[in-house]
Length: 272
Image 1 (spheres, one colour):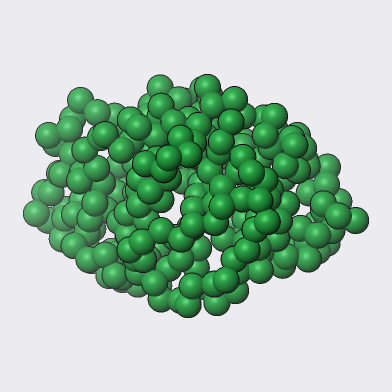
Image 2 (image 1 turned 135 degrees about the horizontal axis):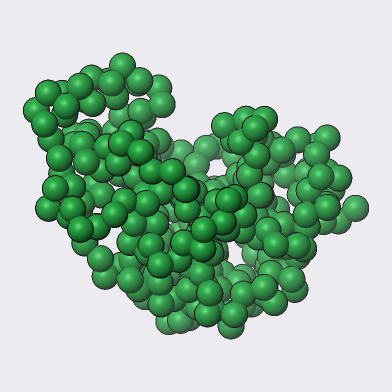
């Protein structure tokens, strides 16, 4: 069964992604990569996997709809491939695998998707798509004043973009997923315009389009098969001192860890 790993890549370094590919390098696992237009496209190699860089390259800004557009571009390019992939896994270029290639291939059969859902949805989360955020090139994390201003303007004007979709509940969870081909088709066939000009809706649009995947687990990251620590960071970046911790969860129920500080950590976990 052919699987594809979709990578949202950024930065000047690609050494972590290269190590990830080396761990999962296999004729049945390919990599489709979007590399942020702000940075030079890296030289990524594989012996057995196909590595494909999607076009056009987008200028990705955190919290904006460019993140959604990047994910959709990856999904579209991989879905139309003649390889007929059965599983689609989204990661970032600083994530690492927590399964060796044999365990990874045996863990997915193409019949079940893995997507996390947050239990509590409040007005603040719903307003990410109810309100209108006009610019796609502003990093909301580094411009909090602008974000607050947009919220106040929307409130003053009583904006409710979701009013015409009032029969559609809004869901949220981690933006990382492992989806079947059938569920990817549902996403690509949907009206995606309502998620554009939004705020951090990359954590909303897949869950809202695929609510049937909610299996009501307390740990939404575990439901998505991702090992993520929000207690030590936002999220925490695993260090060399965490080797034993990661070894304990290797080849269990987690497909990937987010995120790691150095490619040497991947070598330690898998090769030593």
